[in-house]
Image 1 (cartoon, helix red, strand yellow):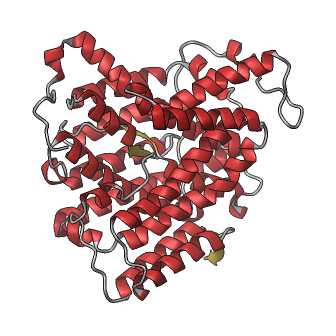
Image 2 (tube, one colour; image 1 turned 45 degrees about the vertical axis):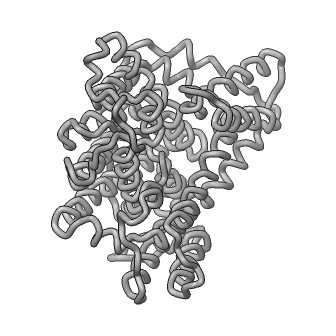
Length: 450
């Protein structure tokens, strides 16, 4: 944006009632995507990732991020979709065969803690050598195909869930498409939330009419809602660590960190301030990484800066980070309401499948957009080789690669193999001509929003 003269940088001038409403708007913008991660992880992969815990750490993580970034950056941190493939892999990993789902989740969260701490490594490198030199090792020819692999690996689960009730899945997908394309104002900012709410209303009607899923089961089971209390602590659980879980989750941090850098570029362009220089990319990386590590340590998902809330900044032209912090407080409060989590937990898997159709496809599409907007030249054999090896490794090693270290089975996932191969080839092969900061639109799309 070139003109920021009409923007409001201190929301206190509007008065507290308007600030509270603006904070609520940001909360709604992040809500649909943030709660969808625990819904998918619990319903599709059988790992008991909790909605209350997720909301609590989204709020706490956002407040933590703001402290680390000197209260200057108007960013909200919600659940990261980049790690969904890691949760799926953990649920099926041979090393955890026979383990109860809660135990598997603890090891997944241990991997998330290490992934979050990798942000600190990148932050140190950025501080010491500068962002442009660091990004030479993570150009779009590497990050783009990795992001494509993340989306394509998740695609079969979207189809599987949608097939339980195709009419319901298509309603969810259709609503998201309609509001994303033709929605106005705030409705365009929250298409995922609208898709979930409207398709859930349709499920209530279909259930009342006696309709069933494709396998004959009931569309909704509302019995658990009455049993849930109105107030209660989020169910925290302490992460556990082993090499297999770490090797599944930690490499995903590469894509998540690229997303962070892209989001900082986008927010800077939106509000007319260069946050990569001040308070500095190293500070925002530390905030994001520590928020993710804190969430993982107590049983929550990885956090990431949210593109939806950047959209709200554009819509409202209120750039005051205080408004984002109000949204974070709302998220923390929602984390103490079990009944709300119980209502969300009754969502049919077909709705999750319909929403996932859009989300998983968009993950891969963003990888493609990253490649296109940075004008990666695939007539260049070097770039073609790197992308080809990443795609084959990411999609071909569907079961990962298992080997033994000191008698312990260790599994490298396809995504981890792809990331290692891509970074190594990019460093070894001559001709790397990518420089961060040359293409603003390309840098803004360096990762997965959500």
